[in-house]
Length: 90
Image (tube, rainbow, N blue to C red; front, side, top):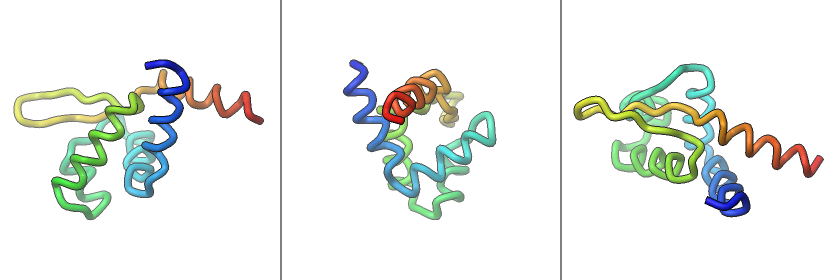
């Protein structure tokens, strides 16, 4: 993903209050599962999965599969790149 494409996807991904709350939760915890994200947002399972997919597609969140369960964590390297982009604007 080119830098401009990544920045575009990443900013769109965190531009939603539900996805931002998931990111904030992930910053405090090592990882969460879909059920944790669903409880956090209060959304349906399908809607929560959609939000998690957008976060993973942006590259800001990674997913680890264990059996039927999916565990999500922050991709701190990508957040560092996003941070550097915003620092260049300051």
